Length: 87
Image 1 (tube, rainbow, N blue to C red):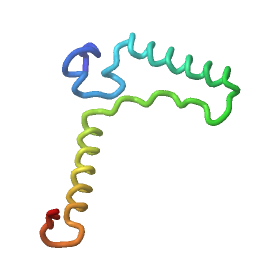
Image 2 (tube, rainbow, N blue to C red):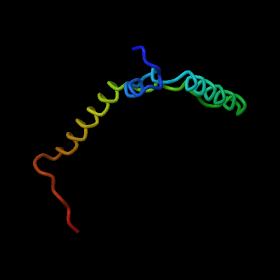
Image 3 (cartoon, one colour):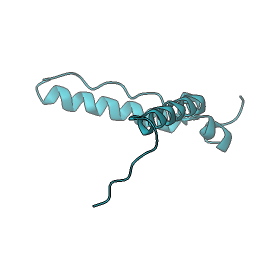
C-alpha cells in the first residue's frame, strides 16, 4: 500500500507499517532508556526485550477467534445446559 502510516486504512490494518516514523523513534528511545535503567540497576535478571511489533488486523481476528472457541469450549464443560446457582 502506498498510504501514509497515520491514515485510517493503515491504522486499521495494524502491524509495523501502521506506525509513523515518530512512533518508531519513540519506541526505540523508550527501549534504550529501559536498557540504561537495567544496566544502572546492576543488570540483574533478564534484559528488557525489544518492543513487540503491533499485531496486524488478521492476527487480531485470529486471536479473537481462538478466544471465542476457547470460551465456547469452556461454556460446554460438564455437558448439557448451564446450571445457575441460586443462593
